[in-house]
Image (cartoon, rainbow, N blue to C red; front, top):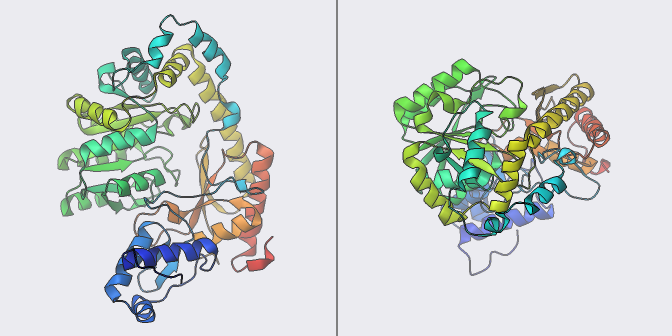
Length: 456
């Protein structure tokens, strides 16, 4: 282990040394670490110091403790806030790790730029504007969220700089450091990073084949107070599950009963074929609904619409001011144009068609394996077969073979994540590259663990 150094707390320095050893390949996914007592004796420090070091490393996703088995390297590097570092752009590696919005089908920006140039009010878009967004941009947001089945006045819509900003605004308004946040046991990594940044305690809730289990949610509500529930009920990331309508009603009823705010990320809602109404529809008075354009139109525009209860709009607007002042009016104007002239809907249609074709490719190539996906989704969930026992080890072997995937460890809140990986079907530039990556994965699945240096 590298030198601890005199200027850092011992536990932090030990956690950093673990990260360095993992990054350098001295520790590999699946490796078992010494017990806390063994490492404490070896380094000449207290067991309490090692306990804090292991906890810090686990928060970063570097290691995982399993009851009755020990502590193991996950191989899913995180930054200090818990954000995943997929390194998808490594030369020669096919990216099936990061879900990208089918960039090749993005709208043509040139017509929008020509229309912008003809706007009499163009200079206003370079000026400071109201924190919640210009009136016509909020009205366009109201029009956009109606496509999800959410009907709201423009005054209840806040224009945010993407989903992550909307989450930052919402969580910083609803929660204070130390508060509990209910989440599904596998959840969006960006939410994990933000919860760590805001010093929130994530409380994982179990799921099944229909998503979040209402009885488990109510049991958690009885046992502890939480400020909010974060959920992605349609084409869940990473499990692809869509919660049925009856269960959504039950979850909303429980949240209302115990006064738990609902934060709903609807990023994939429009990709689904005839999905149930959003969870927020069943409890609008406590719901914060986020409808972004990134996955269905384009990622770089960075526009999302936050629909919130009327009595929270002022506080949320102050959070926008504190974090970003406002969403760039130029971006919000382009989003407004595309919503009003049909470009957003046309793009969504093209991307759904391409997504369906890619899903069919994945189902064909990985036929015989436990693959879960939505007909129009951008990602799939692959449960690893025996003898695979570690998703992180599989991800490392796949990368050696030339394919990047996202291990369950990246999404897990708490211990013992499932042995599975998320596959991005939308990141490869075309279907041929996707097919090549999936065939390589099939080879790794068939070869099993322990390939080591034989993989090139």
